[in-house]
Image (cartoon, rainbow, N blue to C red; front, side):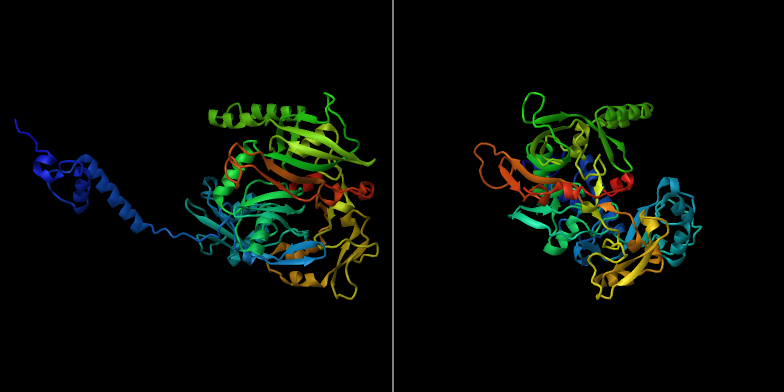
Length: 516
């Protein structure tokens, strides 16, 4: 019987520990010594395929500023702001929305898709945008009746306006080689979301510090106080995990309506709320707890009975366990100052639990409170109007432009014309017009009468992590740390809450929740 020679019989130099390495070298050279094993042939085949793919598809990487990889960020240095009084305006700018064609769009006309699925603009606007090249497919101008196919990439270039925010200073309370701890003002979102982009904490700090920062945790737009930002992604991941796993004690301050109980059920000074939270309306982000949350969970479960097991498992977490401890600090005859210590980190947890107790945050119009003159941002024009129609803070000699609107639009009467004077420093923004922009044409950015909430009496005061044994320095795993920020004005002694709550305003709670 014939015997197939082995590799070591054919080439004695391949015997011993060096045989595999030398065999791989022979494979690379394409040697015909002996025979090629099945594993070596597979290696050669994979290598050739990689070379072909590499030549066919050259991948070019776009350099993204450090710290701006979680979102589609522009360069923060390109953001431009105009501060007028107590408001910070983001200058209008051009922005590109990019989307890949979805399966349900295949074979449909481009204009029909935009007019039925993207309702932010009118059909007439989309028609003009396609005809002028503001909306392109695969980087090319197309007709309005273009039929989308698989692989198409749509780009929509818009003239973007952002709502103003309060111009309060972002104070840096602590900084080392790992983290930056700031006191976030109210009305400022953490990151780009909804209508906010340049007017967000990460963008403003990125422009001021010329440094990308990474988020460790989040605060609501209306909530002020402590925010921990990491300078490196690995530090952000580590601190975020510590907070998520409940190893960090968080303390907030809130001013609620009425006299908050001084003692709990067990004659203890701490009032404990353990009530699961559920999202009742995902469109506006409304959260509920208690029996209302259980009803939401029941309805959601009934809707998804016919879905796959994977989707059912996803929706089993509709009711999210949550726990918050409360302690009364002070009562001034109108409102109570309460210390809040959340043990879990659910969306709007403190606000929902205080409403559940019957003591909502006094100026939180989203969860049982009221909108007052003291915490309402003026219309987008920037300054509230006097009875005679002029601005409260506008200089009569500043030469500001005047824009006429009616009191009927403000809910102050029927058709009574008033005039709002635009400060001189904002005239440049009015001149930044775009021919296709609906807001520029209508002037709605300046004449929009809706008053939206600028802040609520909820403040993140401190975050503390207890150290583990034998570790006493740095901010690494097992290390104890504590960050604090100053109290807000409404939490200091002598604050007159009666005066601040003396002028309630009518509001649309759905609109305010969308702007949360």
